Image 1 (cartoon, helix red, strand yellow):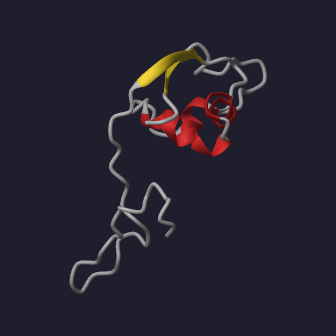
Image 2 (spheres, one colour):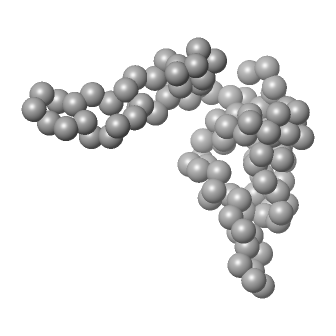
Length: 102
């Protein structure tokens, strides 16, 4: 794992003696508080990577926006494609956008 990874301090799942590993991966990382400095109202066709690029000039920093919005468990919950004739349910929801240096 890269030393720059946000998961670098996370631990791997360990098996209890005599049992298989419950999940072959790493445990979730601890998420510290991220203070939102901008309130952004989602539009129907917004995407989290384009919001990240807009605010941080880096589309790979989308996870910072999720860290500042702990009530959102998964970006997919916000950014699903609307069905024909149906508005995206997250449109109008306010997201907090944290500062780039946090």
